[in-house]
Length: 628
Image (cartoon, helix red, strand yellow):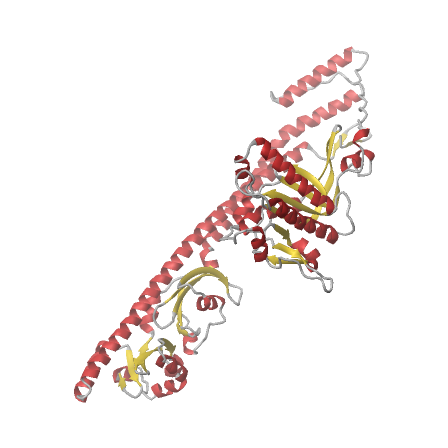
């Protein structure tokens, strides 16, 4: 008992049970409320994200459809006008009348040009905007390259606002016989198609120039957004439409969606900041936190007063035990409750009364601990013998070790097609080969469970260094690859199935020690590298590989291996994805010695008859991988 006695025979309690009760219950309450708040926040965030993504994509598609319809209408109307004018070319008076009527119906079109053929100016547009038609010539000087592209068959849209000083777009498309047609029109009707709200949309051309944007200053200055991460994705992506999350140059996170139009190589981009999406969830979480804090404080007060109903009677019983130690057996205690403490109090009083009537006290008999049995015939060079000889510490110890898991791919399906004796024969042959490779590479077989074999390097003792242990483990895996290739040479079919294995290797800090009882002791290693190696082994099936190592193992021995990095994966208990590497071969460093085949992961797959993976789901593999 953690207590000390003072001179007046009172006992001082270092850790009162009332304090423990308050601490435990308030801790549980805090954890449950925190978990509930976090759970609600996560679910709310997920739902808000889903709604925001759907709405953002809907707004983007609607805006893109309206813009594309408007642009196609402008182009088709212009082509219709030009066709009419071509039939009326000899009669200039009628040509001017038709053009004037067209511009009255389409007041947002400022001019239509086919250099060398037609130059139709909407005088009312220029008068209303207080602009000079000569600005058209100034624009043509800046758009020579784009005109050349249109003459070769491309359709383009350029931003004319910097030249004209008002919202002006210019559509260029082939005019026939190596010419280009230019349509100058106001961009304000297109801007109205984007609407207003939390989702902001803009339109860019194939070079990243801003054509329509909520920030008019970007349009007036002729800004180019090609350096924007999402604009770069939109321009480079082969998809016609896509939605994703991205971070801009200022570190602001967005939901972004784009749609590429079939006309003029332009794209409509719609985005909304994440903080706007999650603003409501953040406010709800904040209010829930305040409510949880208030409930928590009230609960602490309630538990404190409740603990007094337990701690005060227990203190009285402690004082009674002190009196009994001093030989005072006549106790004057009253049980005020009918719970366990009340029963204990009455029993204490009865015990004191009976002790007072006896002259002797019962002393419990001390049992001697039995001697530990040792089987001398089991001693030897193995781990079990070293434990019994005392060469290994009895308690666990931390070590840096490399752990490897080896498993037969689809063993259950293979076993179902074989007779029981054939299954055992196959397993024994397979385990013997795997164990021989481990022993040749100076490793230790830690355990065998069915067709799964776990081996360790660096525990109970390291051969030289952590890097050498890791290299030995990889060499063992490569020997397993060669051994099973020889084993499979004369095999095939249901009765003699071809065996394929997956091996996962991880290096790190483990706890090593013997586990068991006197008659059966096993030296085992436990820790995160064991779990991670098991995850690596399970991933071989989806990645179409046979040997996977973790990042730390790779850093130790990367100069000695040929590897290919795979996509990172999420592992239970880790916040960040884990980097993994597929082992191709050992790297030959001796001059004049030829590098053995294979030298690429594709070569490994060809050698072992493994089909390339279709679309590996790392999170699913990590969730389904079994623990050792």
